[in-house]
Length: 344
Image 1 (cartoon, rainbow, N blue to C red):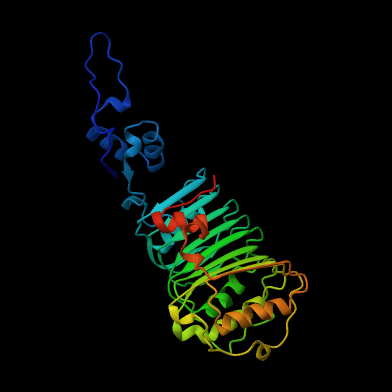
Image 2 (spheres, rainbow, N blue to C red; image 1 turned 60 degrees about the horizontal axis):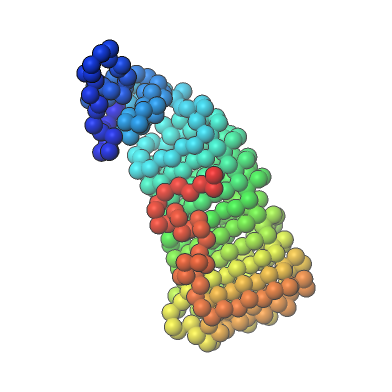
């Protein structure tokens, strides 16, 4: 189905000229163009439309009724796909993605599945995946070449454990418990190299233990950003639990934001209650939003005392998390626009 969209290219050209007319497809009235395109097969209609400066502004219904029940629709030569404000059933989306065998970049923004985003067939060329503000219950893909993953939304299980080349993940959760996230990512992203976790509220739990048989075996850089509310002042030291499942960690950034009450807050346990650890590869710690709270101080002392290779310690009382220059460029772009970011 072809739809007209407002555009500066919406006006047709005069086709009655002196001499022999030189008619082109884009010279036809727009209503007639829509009628013609609607009679073409889906892929031919899209291929034809992008050749014209006028018709490239038209939008198409990618799931017409005549495709219902078919499992072979897709774009076998497509390399980049952006889906925005799409209502689609899980099986229909899975069938389409399964038949985009050359897909390298996939962005899904504000789409409503009310179900899992799952593709059983390997997406062997997918290198970039961005999912933002979608109504989904789980993400499970088999993408061996995936190198960048960005997610913004409610907490859902994320299973990308076949992604041996996954270098960077930026994950922004609006409302969930920190330890629940880490436990889930240990199963779903065990091979990640660099991880950014942003929480609208650092919801921590006391006396929580991870399954230490699971490890982030390749994680070297972790960036944690979150607001610490008063009822979590006494749980900051529990961040140690994350360090113990990342044995090869080299760089740690923790960016705190808080209310005024965090200044010199005396709530929470002492570091010796957690026992000793050894972080052999740990070299750099960077903490911002430091307010001299007991939990923050004990966390820092624990790292310093157990990191024999430590080289640099940076402590800043300013809440850099809220400053534009400190936020990751991916975070700035896709949170502000809700659209795909691509490094290409």
